[in-house]
Length: 188
Image (spheres, helix red, strand yellow):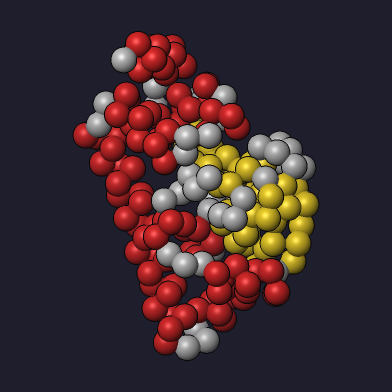
């Protein structure tokens, strides 16, 4: 399952080999954090197995689900990693997980290997920007039902792994709204 669409757009096989060959394998228990909000993100990880949720705590202390990463995807707070700044999100393991990690130095050394890896790094950054831009436009231009349908088209098995409450948080609506959307779609 590819929750993050950029994974479908690029052949990451060489980068995955890098993580498997040079990365350090770490186990992260369910509910433990890969990085906490307001702390620096020190590593980027390739998820061997497991699921991670990205959350953001607002000024009133409310937690909002802002993303997920699944097996074969990458996990990190990328802006924090590349800017050596504090993370804007919590990245928490939803299940017991195994991750191969690299530091930003190791990743940058790879990007600087040659012109092809530099171009690849640029492509990754562009795809991440496109995905975030599409999500932003979705919040402004699509209804909750349209966002829910698009999410399930991209990740049909998502409800097997993520609660209705978390799906609602990701969509920016209440769990009751998601239940209403589900009922409406079943009736069609």
